[in-house]
Amino acid sequence: MMTIHITYFAALRDATGQTEETLRTEVKTANALFHELTTKYHWPFSEADIQVAINDRYQPVEAALKEGDRVVFIPPVAGG
Amino acid sequence: MMTIHITYFAALRDATGQTEETLRTEVKTANALFHELTTKYHWPFSEADIQVAINDRYQPVEAALKEGDRVVFIPPVAGG
Amino acid sequence: MNFQLTSQPIETLIDSLHPHTGGIVTFEGRVRDINEDREVSSLEYVAYPELALHEGHAIIDQALKQFDILKAYAIHRTGHLEIGDIAVWIMSAAIHRQEAFEATEYIINTIKARVPIWKKEHYRDGKTVWVRCDRCAHHHDHNHVVKEKSHGTG
Amino acid sequence: MNFQLTSQPIETLIDSLHPHTGGIVTFEGRVRDINEDREVSSLEYVAYPELALHEGHAIIDQALKQFDILKAYAIHRTGHLEIGDIAVWIMSAAIHRQEAFEATEYIINTIKARVPIWKKEHYRDGKTVWVRCDRCAHHHDHNHVVKEKSHGTG
Image 1 (cartoon, rainbow over the protein chains, first blue to last red):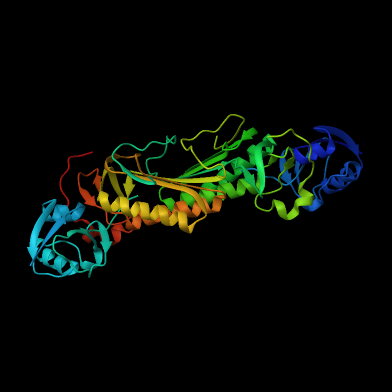
Image 2: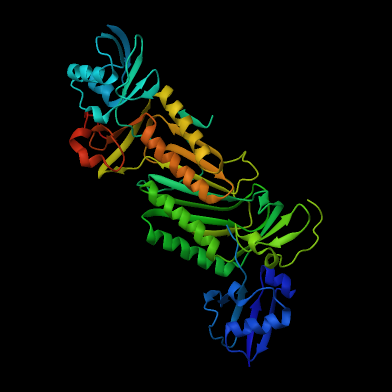
């Protein structure tokens, strides 16, 4: 079990109904966490739509998580 | 014989030593006039370097001249 | 008059450039009133600032490395924007123009692909949508409409 | 700071655009202090105004026909310019950015090729030369130096 801090932006913030949360989880990787949360919140995205940031840097979606990581799932961007 | 008005710009103005002149000539075309004037002023350009405007519009260098035309020989441009 | 000659100075807001600078290309992205055939009344841009700044700086650094330019700069707006407002402004300065065109186009394309900024469109019919990407929105209309809510008229 | 986020309005000097406008690309051509390895102190631009205006308008009209743009505009300076001064300024506004990039690049390339404007470079060594074209000057050095005269130092 480890503690992970998650921040939500844009469509994921709307779909989740909160800005951030801290949770304890058994999963080991970012994509496993994504699937756990998708089940919980019924997010309208597939893994292919999403990028992952860990501690404010993009990481591969398969990246391992460690205690205290700050995770952001990034829905499709539309700046510019 | 016809009367032609010529205006000089840039390098051709320097090489000719005047801004404009009106002359009477036997030649029938712009390129013939160019060669007549090159002989007179020793212009440092060949026909391939030069474009021709007649009455303020680009014309082919072989264009026929008529009485009263205003001619400008255009050295290589360098705007922008 | 769409082409003019002037003997007076031409002035823009760009200064402090290296004296080798011969060509500057800027891009302004503005909020337009139509997107994918829907009438837009306003926009909201939200950024993930820590990562957006990191990625933005990395994009400018890459442009400076990849193209023969003297300077590059970009600024992106956040918050609520009206039609005609500038969402993003980019400039590249180079000795020769070709490099400035290429760098500016690289920077806007890469910002759109990588920088975590999201755009919520507010429509005249009162609905709102988080846009997934430019020029591809209506091909995936069902997935796009992540959440629509009534928003008054506009 | 070469990349910034801001919640404040971004402002430029461009206004009065169609509300469909999503992308604006500008080009600024500036006087630089080095050309073809020679140190330039200032420039002089001379135009043949009647033909330059005709050709300039024709270029803008062609850009409006050829590219999917909403507006295009160009202005060219004449007279004596110092290092850093803007010699030419061009803008294209379009619904989508790609067309604005293409149109602006077309306009500057075509102005340089067709509009009867000439540039005399004044060098730090006091000489002056009517430039034949950009980026090709030194390949024809003898032909270029149409007339050199002493011009003081600068």
